[in-house]
Image (cartoon, rainbow, N blue to C red; front, side):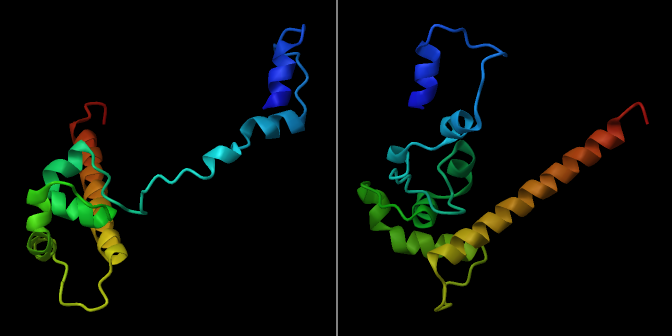
Amino acid sequence: MKAIINLLKNEHQVDGNTPMTPELIEEYFKTPSEYKNVDLLVKKNALIPTRKYFGKYADHMRLLSNEHNSTNFGIRKGYKREVQSELREQGIDIRDSGLTTQIIRDSLWNREFADLTKSHVEQVQSYLMNDEKT
């Protein structure tokens, strides 16, 4: 990045004729070392708290899936009971001794992906059926 900044500070104009070496291009796209240590606290297939998931899943399920704790006493008080109830409602057997949070996340994400795929296919079919050109 320093080499690019130095190139821009020099007297010549940066335009289509400016020589860009492969080293300069590689340096431009290199991730700064300070960004490598940033922990986003996001798990693979987590239910990131978006508007869509707020309405569909209770706080307890999102907290379980994302492996976060809540400071809200009301949520912490009934956490275990609510999570068990929500898992049953989602069709996940809580009696399975091998059940892990990652398995729950994967199961919920697979279900979400299937729902998205189904809605997309239905939307495409609707467009095709209502298309006046065909």
